[in-house]
Length: 299
Image 1 (cartoon, rainbow, N blue to C red):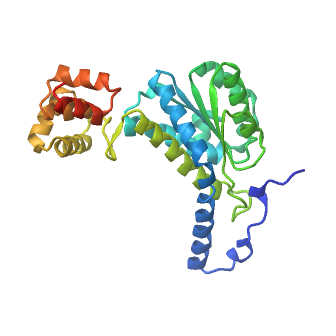
Image 2: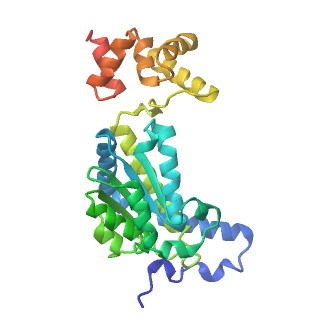
Image 3: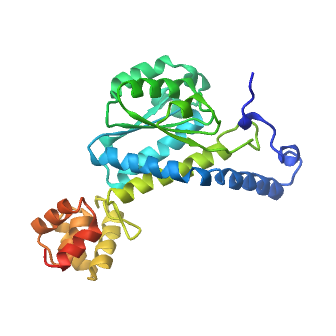
């Protein structure tokens, strides 16, 4: 049997049990930092994955995250945060977690080995051409995750595969293989540590790049958020006031014309009518910068 690198002995593991608390934390932190270094060689593939994600969403298709256990939790965190962060419709961002909601409350390992669970999940979600599957598996060989990817690819979906074992089945299957060479875990086999740290950072990059390319980020601000609670109203008003150079009351008045949507409110606060703001955003693919430039040029 081939032993995966994530299962082999870490150089610092021998002293972990006898170290004092601070030394133990130092060793664990250092191991996390080393794992993050595995991302750099994959920058080009991560960028391609982010662009593919943006293309799927822009065309009205879906992004389907897939995972089990700790890797699945990293995928789930990214999946759940995208609608609130970038204003992407919830139906365009889907999560398939081995064992479903019940497995989130009690992390039973057996479900990740049950490829038959993938059949029902794939049938329910119905992946198709134009959809993008983002599959995360430290070993790259989790049966549930692989089965979902195989069935989704057969239906025409594209696959982003994130794994920490070179030559693993997931990387071989993926259209966008992201190999994170995170090496041995400081707790052998506990991929909730180094591998998961690198996975989460990688997913952050993929989804954030997608948000930027979709026009949902302007000058480092989340401009596609819809202000539907008190905290977000204040945040949205601050963005509108900042970008339009106006006061908070004028910003809130503009948001009142857009039901809390920040992008058109920025343009309205800069002098556009609601209809003009919507047209400028439609003409620029939802990008605030070019819409502002067009408004200032008298379009």
